[in-house]
Image (tube, rainbow, N blue to C red; front, side, top):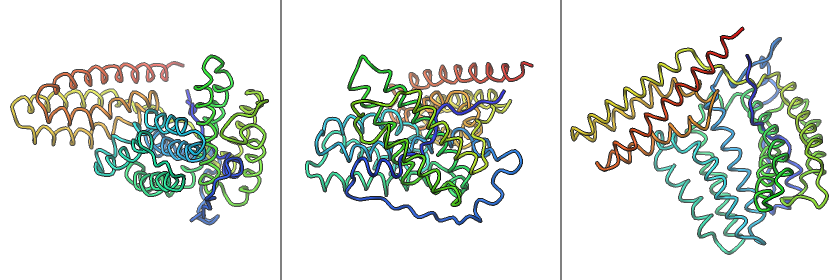
Length: 379
């Protein structure tokens, strides 16, 4: 059984969104790769970059795309609607920042603190001057997110055009699903607008950064197709008075995503979980129990060292398999192991509670992966 990604990369809005939002600072992205970089991608059966690099890496890469996209929309919306801009920043913190924070906490905690505090400032105490707000957004979407990407995405994946094309393909597909969700959200107009803007932002980032993932011979064709879709269905950060039917946008963006995958000769299937994933999750359980015992004995430095060892061994090997089945559950476990539990070990009153909750989450993950593996074994 082959699993396709449920979220899709959004090549679309590079040109469209820039035109629609009338940004004062257009983005020009220069592709560092020439066509020779794409030679060898795919082949007869196509390459499978998410299988190669892992579903957990793909999940973090797509979260970074969404953060950049939401910040771009917030920058456009803020002069007229500061509260709506703040809602966009809050949404990406809740949905996307949490996905990359655990690995930042492990690899570069000072950067994690800087990124979170900068987003909190944009949400809670943003500059009232438009130029200052733009500068603050650009600092986050440029310098801080660029640095974060180097920490949470392996260099081989960042430099692989096939992986970047897979992220783009999946972003476009995800944008179509968000658009459909927005068109169906009739009860809450503010939620409908927010979901529409998520789709708009993903397309915007795809069109400013994502096009470099496409071999040069096909870029103009795909760019024109995306521009046509965006001009008709998502021309501005606010839905048009007569929106395009969701079925049509889903079909159009699906065709664009297929064209990207075909051009790059990739298959965006998710990897199947390794058969050893449940055992690796059990190893995390045993490691956490041992670290808690060390903590209860009063040796806090040693207990923190044990947690870090778990993260770089058992978690690292279990993450791709769990992310292929339930990426949200992986995020929950990573946050507990890499952020919440180390913080709890600094105080003696919450460590047992957090460790117990993490143990239950790991039991859930073992059951979920075991069920998936059983389904894969069915003829």
